[in-house]
Length: 518
Image (tube, rainbow, N blue to C red; front, top):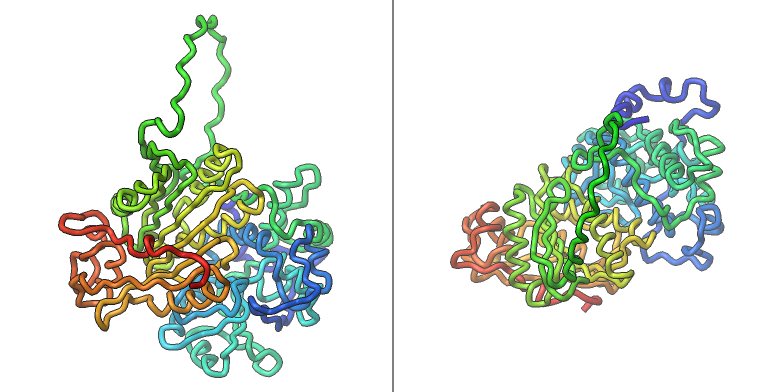
């Protein structure tokens, strides 16, 4: 099955999908709410090699499945081609890092309309088939894997439903079981259960070529038996979805022609210079991603810079280059990635080539003979949505050992973390103030700061922008980039990222440092 066939498969629904299949999907009630991050389970074995073992005695929690679930989410988001999307808003709060805020586009829009005026606390949303399998074994109220409404991409369970339920219904959600399951709401949209199952089948086949499953999207006995044997930490090989446009399939080989006589052996080229003496260069390695090599000694030090919404390739490179000169170069770091901003504020297109960053980090890990890389990631504004996608991919890459790294993340007034803190050694959300003004996403930074401080991962950093000349909050937003934004009352991304005449790049948060909860 190719990606191009998937939209019609989804839209045809159960009749087309299941036909003569022995098992058909049914809508089963499922009232599980994910256990909070700080819940304790005395018999919880999160080091187990298989989902079947990790489910024993676990109770109503999906803890321990994060690695495999991250791979399944990555595969499914690719296969669904926009039929489900990630959702983020300061007023939308997941009660656990294992709650995946993923919905149909219709559900996302309805949720964002509600969040414009109300705080929404979500106990459960999209679940992978791996998570549903664990819940079905340890939680009496959970549906069988492949049959829960929480695998459709349309369902959410709302903790504060009494205060927001009416607004959710007014904005497009249904409330199908108000008496027996009052927390449960459903949005319109395609049913993605079959695609979720298909994502697992494809990952299994990629990692088990001699024990292949039929890729039919049906959660039958053979599929569930292989699921039980799958590693909770993730497969060695992750996403298998077709290559994105920047990585096209190779053209067919031309017809063979008679070989000419072999030329004389060439003179062996001189050996390449060691990395620290190689000339500096830049190359585009994926959609919106440019890699810059600098001839410096610390080949283990990496800086990844994500531009915000509206930041072009040139703009993000301009900001990244300024950060390189002010912060990475003095630390002798050799590797710099600049990533353009998303085409939509919420990164609904998933168009950036994050997988190329993971691939290059894997190459750098190999070149370092397995010594850990020291990676610093900085994301501004909506660039945090793009960074969240990278973190989801790094969960699997680190679990497989293809990327060995210590990762520190500075989120500059951007979207909240939605993949959990486990992939990071340190996380510091950052916002700016100027007098009574705060950058627009300060509340989101403060909320994320609570979890990073509690977990010992980091703390909130507040940048003093009182000398910026700002008279509006969006100017303060860009005061995290430049010491004096060009538009005192609003945004001017193009110039704030590239024009440093009479201005300096802001590195206060980097020099403050980010570590353990102080």
